[in-house]
Length: 126
Image 1: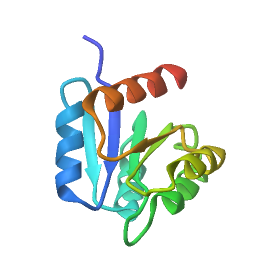
Image 2: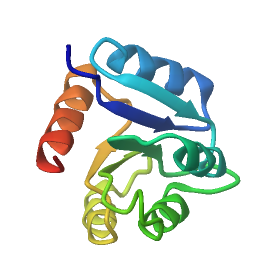
Image 3: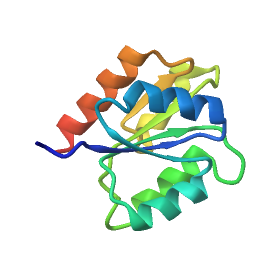
Image 4: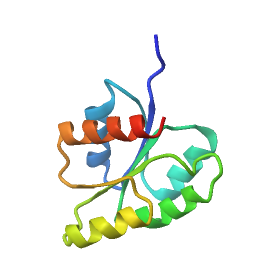
């Protein structure tokens, strides 16, 4: 049996974390963190294959988190997907991809879109 890919979910809203975990737990080993600092701490002890991070969070937002991840040798190539409910999506989507996010997903997320995006990110970064 093949080991499940490991996904790190980071969001400051517990209900969103729970929902995303429900969407993914059947296919992936899911780890969760409630902010960017918690996520970075988890990355030091656990290798993951893909990260999904909220854009707007207290303590450390998604952009600050991505910057820190890209400076970590062991995590620099992990695909990072950003989830946001921020409005000016079209302009922001281009900017977020330029700074290194694999994909930009708008909340509320659908199970199908989330699973498809994660699957594509994992295949592309094997």
